[in-house]
Image (cartoon, rainbow, N blue to C red; front, top):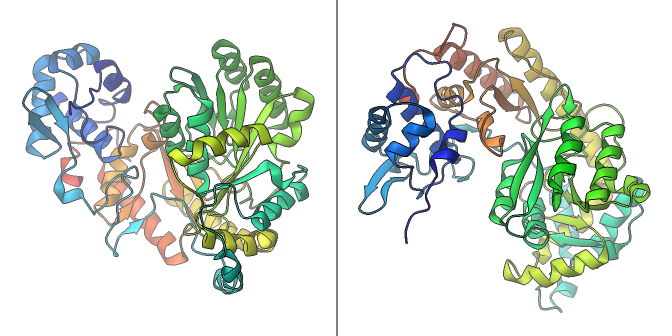
Length: 484
């Protein structure tokens, strides 16, 4: 099979800041930048890099610079030469099973602190919920076990939770999925045709924009900032100009910025989406993890007056436990029927045992959130306070909820910082992972979900890594090769 070609134009978009913050020779800076893109998964394994002449023209450098950069990547094991296919990307064997990119999701050694995924350990009461669920197993065994719709009791519990939050919901409006990511991918497959515009926030959850791209969507981004929130003017302009098939948003405790969409911006989104025929997908995966302030009603509760089509995505994973692979979609029965018809080509149903456990847990959501709230508040205050005290040049927001803070580094050195931290046993995702088209090298997503001792370790490592890459000086010195 011929490797997929990364065009020179696409490579140039990913390499926007490749010369920033370094005094290394141009070919070293270019090879380091490409190395980071491979490690972060933004250039997948097996992709063919652009021809030397084409990339040189796109980056406005000499062909010799590109040739030397590719040669260095070959020496380091990140590129192999394939007859008839040119320079093909691979991940060196030494990185497989070690701190590899979030996209690959590999297992890391026990002595490493893996913070690529923002998640909590299991909530109290999970074991007891499993024991209660086991009482329903004999009845479940009377069925065949292939469940593409969802356990009736679980769907009723999810519908009741929405109703309690201000969005009246009937169980017929709910389908249970294998986590929120499965819900996103299924919706992308049904709602997006090849070439359709898809509005996404920038930055955003990386596996969401991957799902829409895989469905053939043409992504158009709208800026979101941890402090200024959504750019309402850009949101309206982009909706009207592109008339996207889908707008994927996280209006409550946005991942990764932690921002919450204002009431006026929500009304604007729904009004304009209704006029352009855009289906709005509101992902609430982080939405209930509020530390302080009053939560907003679900976005679909506002949709009636605007006549907008709003689909809600929820998940048990962030609230209860990542190992409980249960998510859901709330939508019109007509759309759910389309999803159910399309579902068997990707999977044959949600695991029954997981659903039985979730059926026990969802009615207890409020009590679990109350316990989570104090833990998250302490974690946030510890991490944010320590980073502000020890790295005062950083912009460290204190979000109203969620699991992370979106730190502004001041300079485009996120990947260098992440690589330096990895060499000290702390594995993070660089800011660029969250950009639909790269970028965000000036930012770092820092979780605060870990136990107290690991919070101390995280801040210690970030402080040392910042000094190591020259973060407190005028520029980053030398090459990244030493910290890979």
